[in-house]
Length: 101
Image (spheres, helix red, strand yellow):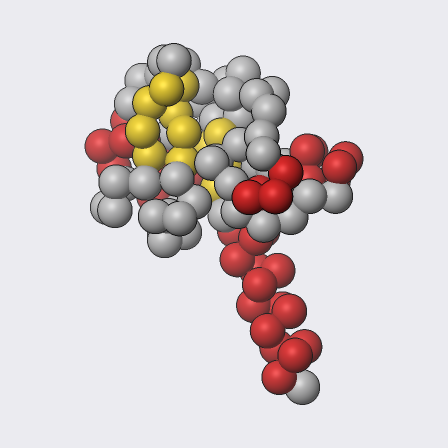
């Protein structure tokens, strides 16, 4: 029972982890200012989420005017390549590295 519970919790964490759709991000920086733990920074004019700092509060998801920040449950890269876990906000997780959309 405990193993099943841990798998469910880990799956929820993965699916709720935000990722940045790089092709939609316009680099406005609104998400950087709203993040309470400083998990979002800008690289090459695009938002990047440090998944080691992210607390999955959802503020960046709500504030992004371009809807460029989305939950991993909507990440086509996870479905296509079956990667899971945490990454740099690009949706591939620690083991998979990351590519811009």
